[in-house]
Image (cartoon, rainbow, N blue to C red; front, side):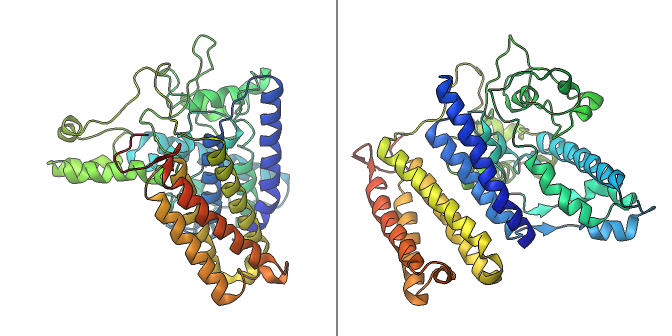
Length: 423
C-alpha cells in the first residue's frame, strides 16, 4: 500500500493540473462545464477513495498471487509481450467488472458514485467508490494467471490502467477519427455517462473499445441526442459518503419490507433497479422521466460558503498528501486514525454544503477531537519533524472549522436551518 501511496504523490498534481487546464479553457471559450459545489463533491469523493485504497480497507476474496501460484499453465518470458498480455488482460477484466456493476443490483452500489454527478468533466472522473469493500477483481484476471503473468507486472500496470481512464471525462474534445475504433474516447464516454434511453449501459470499455464492439455494448454519440448526465434515481446530495451507500441502503430497505422470501434473496442479484412489486407499489422512488427537463440538484450557497467548501477540500488534500509523504513513519494505527479524520471531515463539510442540520454537530465534534489530539500529543502525526509550526497550523485549521461549522451549520442564506427545511 505504501507503493500505491507513493504513486499517488505524482498522480494527484497531474490530475489537478489537467482540471485547471480544462477550467481555464472553459472560461476562455465561454463554455464552462464546472460548478463549484459539484466540483468540490467530485474531488472530495476522490479523496475518500484514495484514503480507503491507500489504507487497504478491503476484504480480498482471493489474491492474484494465489491464482498465479495455483493456476499457471505456462510462464511467459520477460519482455514486451508480457506487458502487452497483462495490459489486455486487465482491460478485459475491467470491461466485465464494469458490466457487472451496471447490470447487477448489488454491484451497482460500488459504481453509482462515479455516475452521480449531473455534470461531465475531469473532476467527475474522481468520483470513485469507498463501498467496494469486498475485493473480487482478481477472479476476473484468471486468464492472466493461466498464462503465468507475474504479480509484479499486474501491480505496476493496474494503477497505470486506472489513471489512463482520467483524460476522457471531458466535453471539450470531439470525435477522434480512427481512434474511435481502438480506444475509449471522450465521445464514447459521454455516451456511457448519459441517462438518455439510447445511451444507458453502453460503452463499458475502460481503455480499449474493442470489447464493446465485440460484445454488443457499443453506442456512438448521436448529434441529435445530446447526452444528459447523472443517474435516473438522483443522488440529491453533495456528500460522497452518503452517495456511496444510498443504493445499498435502498436494497436493504426493500429486502426487509417485501413479503416475499424469494424476493428478499434475489433482489441483490437482479438487474440494476429491479424492486419487488409489493414494495415498489407502497414505497415509490423518484425516477427521472424527462432527461431534458428534470430539476438538477442545487443548494443555497453564497460566495462565503463556496469559499469555505473549497478551503476545506484544499486542506483535506494537503493533509492527505502529508499522510502519503509520512506514510511509513505514521504506522498502521496512526494511519487509520488519520484516515478517519479525513473521512469525517469530508462528511462534515459536504453535509454543510447540503445544508443539513446535523453538519453543525459533525464539524464541532471533529474540530474538538482534532484540538484534543494536538493538545495531548503536542504534534499532528509527526508534522513537527518537518515544520515546527505544523501542529499550530493544523490547530488553527480546526478552530476555523469550528467557527465555520457554527456559522454555516446554523444558517441557510442567513436563516436558521431546521429539520423541516426543504433544500
